[in-house]
Every structure is written in structure tokens, then in C-alpha cells.
Length: 61
Image (cartoon, rainbow, N blue to C red):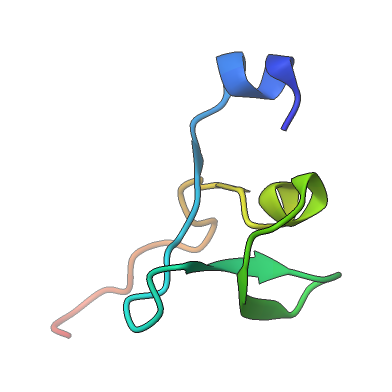
């Protein structure tokens, strides 16, 4: 993550519940649960969470 991103965007890492030493990361578009060992792994396991683009469904759930 760049210094600019760290200052201007809220970023998150998602830790695996069953394997607390592993995080959700991505390669291209697929997601994986892996250990974070390198700087690239840290970047791949860091996400910016934004509101969804689709509207809330109407009616009861």
C-alpha cells in the first residue's frame, strides 16, 4: 500500500476465522486464504471496502 493510499482510503484485511495466521488475498480476481509473508502478499490481502452498486432489494427478506 502506498503512503497516499494509507492516508486517503480506509483499507481492510480479512483474517481467516479458522486459521488466524492467514488472510484473504487475491491473484487476478480469484480469492485465496493464505499466509502473508511478503510485501506483495500484504498488498494482495488489502482491500478498500466501498458501498455496493446495486440497490437494496425491496420487500421482505
